[in-house]
Image (cartoon, rainbow, N blue to C red):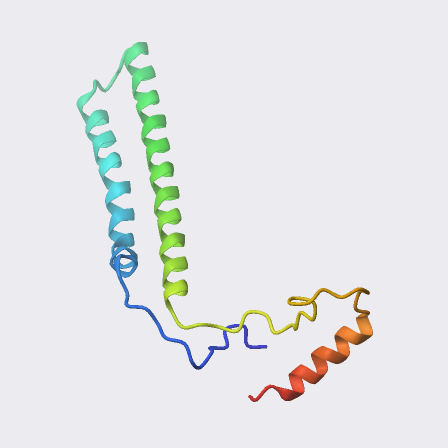
Length: 131
């Protein structure tokens, strides 16, 4: 089954900011990870080798804060990547999504359609579709 079967009479929109962001995401991810880690490394290098209890607590708090900043940054980059993919797919050509006929879309029936009637309608519609 081909899930992404393109519709022939559709057109694609011009690409915009989504492709620019998509190409820069690895650099954004790397920079957003490296900068806090370099700052944390500088903090650890500039403190005493044998820190007092208060300094050790402060260093541990800095470790946790930097870890949280990095995880938050990764989640934002992932969210931005998902948004770019959605926009890229939406601007692309049209695809066949669902080939089921809805018999009551314009005129609701008085009686519900049976499963057999629906299967027969789908079978006849599949036979009529050109490949």
